[in-house]
Amino acid sequence: MKKILASAFICLLGLGILSPSMANVTYKDEYKLSCNVAETTPQGKAVARFARLVKEGTGGKVNIKIYWSGQLMAGKATNELLLMKKNVGDFSLSSFINWAPQYTPGNLFLLPWFISSRPDKYKALDAIEAGKAGKMIEADIAKMGLKILAWGEQGARELTNRVRPIRTPEDMKDIKFRVVGSPLFIDIFNQLGANPMSISWAEALTALQQGTVDGQENPYSVYLPNKIYEFQKYLTEWSYNMDPLIYVVHENVWNEFPDDVKKTIADAAEECGWYNKHLARLGLDDGTAEKWLREHNLYPTEPQEINPRKFVQDYGVEVTVLGSEEIAAFRAKMNPVFDKWVDKIGKELVAAAEEDMANARY
Image (cartoon, rainbow, N blue to C red):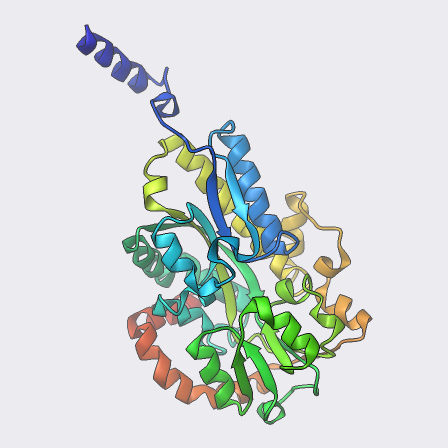
């Protein structure tokens, strides 16, 4: 009798009368998502939408709870990869800046002016993520028991300080900048004659307000929600590196889901990754972000998101936008950094990224 019932069940599955999701799958009451940003940021809004779409699309089976601002990491963002590998988090919205200390190839995106020296830094970045280099990184991450579902973005990383406008490498001399805890960042700022200081983000805002450090580097998507413009008078758009995000799920969690649930989650991650990207680029690209957001009825209403540059200028911040020749002067200082870091990152991966960018349609 059991054999007859089993055969009938298999037949029903084959005929599509029963879907795989109706099979005996045990779902957790809550799936933890590690996130190192606040809900008010563009990337926070995108990942909140991801959790909502997944819950709706799975009929409440997959309920993702977001742990904002590094709560699962106790504020130590560079521990996230280790904790994700241990399945402390089921999902994450992660930055390679935080993963790079444990995953050296992730420094690819942080090579100074490697991506932003191209005709269009956003198209160059998209080409890497969708191309050969992106596939190599996804394969590496899979070996750690983690799956990249989609790519998001914090944006191009810009520079702010309270001392003076910065337009040339010489303007960097002796200014104390807060940087993330990555050896590559320390090398970049040292090479430019600045005084880099590795301070956790939990302590950074206080250090900036009290003048313990003079400046910092971050995308607009971090600079604005944290109101750094209130105490940093000078901003330089130099886009020295890019800050892609990845929507990640632990392999053990992913493998428990039936195919239809996997598709719902993957589709939601893909949509919200693009939502994230276009929010981060709005007012700063060639108009592509505005077009996409309007077409998807996701165009924001906040002035600081619609035109971040104008918003801070209206507040009194002096914004310096570097031209290609000025960027070339900074890039010319970086040869020792490339000599040191290309080997660490992997020549094959760097070459693949260069090929991806060369094949992009600018």
